[in-house]
Figure 1: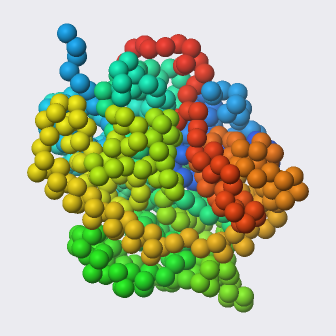
Figure 2 (figure 1 turned 135 degrees about the vertical axis):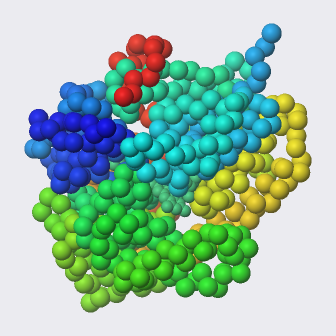
Amino acid sequence: MPLTVYVDGVPHPARPGQTVAALLLATGRTAWRSTRHGGRPRGLFCGIGVCHDCLVAVNGLPDVRACLREVCDGDRIETQDGATLPGPAGERA
Amino acid sequence: MTAPPRVVVVGAGPAGARAALAAARGGIRVVLVDGEPRVGGQYHRHPLAEPGSRRLHPLERSVVAQPRIEHLSRATVWALEAGPRPGSHLVHLQQGSADAAGRTQRTLVADALVLCTGAYDRVLPFPGWELPGVVTAGAARALAVGQRTAVGRRVVVSGTGPFLLPAAVSLLTAGSRVAGVYEAGKPSRWLRNLPAALRDGGPALLAELASYAGALARHRVPCRSRRAVVAAHGDGRVEAVTVARLDARWGVVPGSERVIAPVDALCVGYGFLPQLELPLAAGCLVRDGRVVVDARQATSAPGVYAAGEVTGVAGPVAAAAEGELAGLAAAADLSRACVPAREAAAAARVRAGRRFAAALEETYPIREGWRSRLTEDTLVCRCEEVTYGQLRDAVTDRGADAMRTIKLTCRVGLGACQGRICGRNAADLVAGLLGRPPADTLATDRRPLAHPVRLGDLASGPDGPPATC
Ligand SMILES: Cc1cc2nc3c(=O)[nH]c(=O)nc-3n(C[C@H](O)[C@H](O)[C@H](O)COP(=O)(O)OP(=O)(O)OC[C@H]3O[C@@H](n4cnc5c(N)ncnc54)[C@H](O)[C@@H]3O)c2cc1C
Ligand code: FES
């Protein structure tokens, strides 16, 4: 059964088991956040949860690794063009 | 009454799955913990669930069919502590949707611990490697095989090691055009080792590699050795790459540079780095970036065994053999029910794997010439955006000579990945600048948390079932 998720408010069909990174790439994006210091674009890099380049906000919660997170029906995915997510020092131990 | 002994295996790749099966067959209760949804690790990636199909890989089927194994999927171990008995450990984990708030907290008591946490791609920095569209070879394969998604339409693959071939083939399968595979090393050195490679790697592995080479030839993918991507270019994403010929030390042969354009993705891999944080947290001795194990996969820490790529990179067959031996050894040590014949057979396969790993390392060494490609503003640390110039100044102007001080001086390795991506490269660069290795290379491998944990979850403690959809 196909799912529907929202990328920056726009609905997109998604497949069960699909990762947020695969979904974002399928929508034609290569970058979905900017770096804290230089404001440079980043997207997928290591693909297995090691590098933390692919962070994205899901359902309002930032710092989710897009390469690991599987989509759920109705997920709201917020890319971060031009802005910065709160740094790992804030939200995480 | 005391509970029957329990083995906790961390990592359900070829090594961990085999370890769990071997220990369970030895009559021991096993908990097999892995962050991924399915059993299989990096090698046996499962294609995204097709509607109506729930096909299990044979390895996964054996795990599911074994009543003494409890498989905790989507569960990440973030800390280890000494347990109530000598050699026992407390294993702290979180289960549920990746990086979600309110994942279920659990703490297991492990009478023996088998660490099979695998490895991740190493990428040597070069100008432009931080551009979106530049990914690791492993990322490209995981995306192609696990998600049936191509990382780009016109892709270049570069780095060193036999793994570049399956990565390139997976791209073809996902529908990408591969504009070239550039291997910095000289794989013809393999030929010198061929009889040994056949004996130790096994004919199946060589046949697999030959099939990849065949697929690349059929698609007329140019495959060149002693060449590498030395720079990536683009505005906000990779659009072109520079490929150059390398000399024996991996310096660029002047005048050999050639731009390949357009490309929309570049996949890079210079071998693998073992995931060391849990072995280090358990107090295991680590040498040359690998967990040191004895002839039965026991580490220097009592009650802790390690298997697979954490002990050295030799491919999935060797990882499985090490896993089986570790599982047999852990079960035998807990129950005193040793199966000498099975241990001996597994040990023989492990020795072959070790020889194969040594041959791989000799065939695909990393040469110091890569350092000459870095310019003043090439990023060394991607998270904290520390440039080569800043790292060099910390060493040459400010006299820092230990990784710990260098980290604090220029912030290399202090970001979200905790130095996993840059630590080894930074230590090598510092060694080049100092003319000797820095005082404390391991400082970049020690991490307080093996996995990120949300502060709110730490405060809330154990609760209901895992939150997944
Ligand atoms: C992205 C990638 C792709 C690869 N593709 C190939 C390939 O196509 N062909 C090939 O020959 N080799 C490939 N390799 C090399 C591969 O690592 C080995 O061949 C083989 O999979 C090693 O088996 P392993 O059991 O040692 O580790 P892995 O298969 O890597 O398994 C380790 C497991 O441990 C889990 N884990 C790690 N840390 C934790 C933790 N803290 N908590 C819970 N779980 C944890 C991981 O989720 C993973 O499933 C790849 C490696 C990577 C990194
Ligand atoms: S791409 Fe590295 S953590 Fe997701």
